[in-house]
Image (cartoon, rainbow, N blue to C red):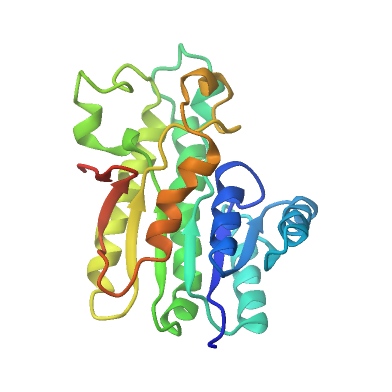
Length: 246
C-alpha cells in the first residue's frame, strides 16, 4: 500500500472548500485545510477527523505572500510533497456592494487580490512540491460567470448579473489555467478549471434562493478533476455536465 495522496484546499474551512476537502478525504486522500483563521481551520479539520477522515489544517491567507510562503514551508516540512492543489479561496464583494458603482477600481483590486493573485501566489509557491508528486493535480475553482461565451449569451441565467470584477477575475483564472497547463505539458501535472455551479454558500448571501446546488453536489466536479488519472485532460474547463466554453 503506497502513501496516501496529500491535497491542499485553500479556503477549505467552510462552504464549498470544506465539502471538497471532505470528499477528497472520503476518497482516501490526506487533506490539508488552508484557512486564514487558524482556529477555524483547526475546527474544520477536527470535524473531519471526527468523521474518521485524515485531515489537518495549515494557516494560509492567499492574499498575504508571507503567509503563503510560511504555509509552503510548513507543508514541505510535514510531507515533503503535494499531490493536489485546489485553488478554491474566492470572494464576491460585489454581491453586497452599492449597485450604483457600475465599475469600481477598489472592488476590482479587492476581488483580483484573492481570486486571481491569491491563486497565482499559492500555485507559484507550491509548484516545487507538486513537481515531486508522481501525478500532481491543480484544480482552479472558477465559474461559468467567467466564461466570455456565457457572458455574451442573452440566454444565460447570469446574463444580467452585474458583477464585472468577479467575472473578470474568473476569466483571468481560466486563462491562467490554459497557460499553466501548456507550460507544464512535459510534466505529469494536470491543471483544469471547474465550475461547481451556483451553490448555497456564504459567498453570495443574496443568491441563496437562486442556488439550486448543495455544496455536496457542487464539490463533486472539483474532486473529479483533483483525482483525474494520467489519461485525463489538462488545460480545460468543466462543470458537472462536461466541457464549458471559454
